[in-house]
Length: 443
Image 1 (cartoon, rainbow, N blue to C red):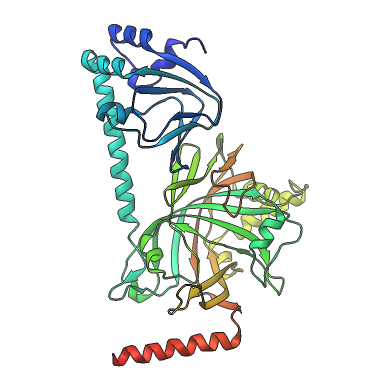
Image 2 (spheres, rainbow, N blue to C red):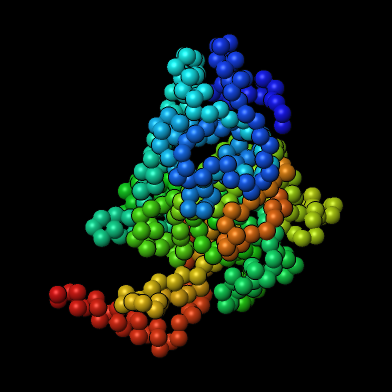
């Protein structure tokens, strides 16, 4: 790239509307580069010697070798270390082929000294970054709302009710053998679905327990959940959840389970035509789509059912009939008396005396019934794609289709369908637990 149109640079907020003298300084000082993917642009710990402008393509920001966020064009990169003269706090590499422009520290300092417009842009961008940190801090504080009460952080009993909330659903296709290996004994893949599984992103508000102890408390959280379609030993269909990713700190820190769902702390962010899942301090995956299209319930169901089947769209009139049956079933009076959705989890609780080698006090297959509320606001997400940034993650594959709607549900009490512990081991664990309980009463 030997040059860039003036309008490309002025799309960068820091360089928009500069005085003529400042524009001339940028024009004389700016350097342009075209870089391939997987190339390092900034190294953590290095000196902040230049300010980079991403003109096209995508960059990945890494800490300790793990992706923590993505940067899209157009935008500036590396501003903070130019302002505070500090070392680079993270590495940046190209995720796709990119075009960048850059100015050195001397040009940056002269712009700050001579261009009031540039100085205001820098202040505004730093304020925007600070506001983002404030918002993230507030989101973290909200994540401490929970289903527990003091003393002893007791779990408030259910059932738990969640009024309709926005949910995005991505139909994925992975290696069938990989998915089958995740299913615990007693569950098998649904025949004919191949490697199809579901990945949902839920933005829940107003969740509450129907139990009198809840005293009107409501809870809000966000969650990502993979679901693997399966059948149990009685050939009843359902979905298996290997683990869920809520932004609920206390539930995870305490190790308390709501009906046995294995949880890891996750953070889901929704942007303009994309959603991301962060686990710990790294970006685990990102889903994108090009456009959104609102539809009625029948075509929504027809498209959803067609995407779940490896055979593709359902033939007519079968597809239309399935869609109309869904529209009829998606009513309060039908859902209140209709079948529940079975969600299976493997509930595992370590023994209290487990030191070193992990021993389990509880190892069970639990069936959790979900009673769905009527769905609404049906949306098709067009041309979706999903990228995984951790190759060791237990699921992967390609995105087949994506959908969004408003969905609510009531979460009922789980039922144990299979106990994986040997009978004598389970009895011993129970006996030890009772002995410890009696000792605590006297000590």
